[in-house]
Amino acid sequence: MPAIERGQIEALVPHRGRMLLLDTLLGFEGEACECGLTVRDDPLFCRDGRVGAWVGVEYMAQTVAALIGLKARAAGAPVKIGLLLGTRRYQAHVPAFVPGMQLRVSATELFHADNGVGAFEARVYEGERLLAEASLTAFQPEDVARFLEDVQV
Image (cartoon, rainbow, N blue to C red; front, top):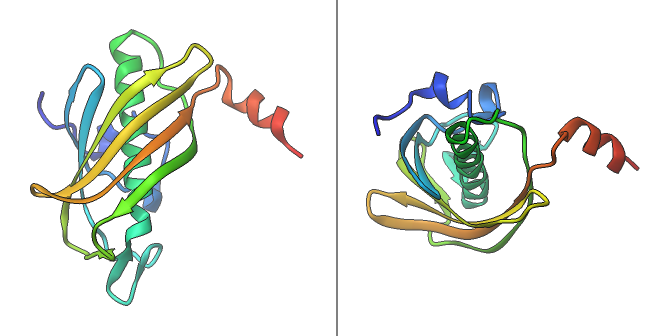
């Protein structure tokens, strides 16, 4: 599959502006996808020339969003907003990401329940070097606006 450029990533991931951290879709097959990005020196996340390793969770979450969007498109359904419920076993093998690094982020769906909850394994690489890994849980309600209204405290 040819890479999808940033403008097309926006059709899959709800983030906009500086919060859209992915640059390209590198591949999609079945239950897995890979996205690419260049670590930016944007002060939103970059401090003292480094982007904290914790931002890897967001790289992974956006890749999961891209995967869910691609699967929806493949099924002829619209792309909908989802919510990150949690992250388990996040392991960063580096203390930080350096602006300019070219990263590859993979996400694989492990299961998807009828209630909209899904579990995913995700990893961040620079070349073949594993930089971070985690399990993520996401939820995609039928109507996200109504769901958010219902859960307001």
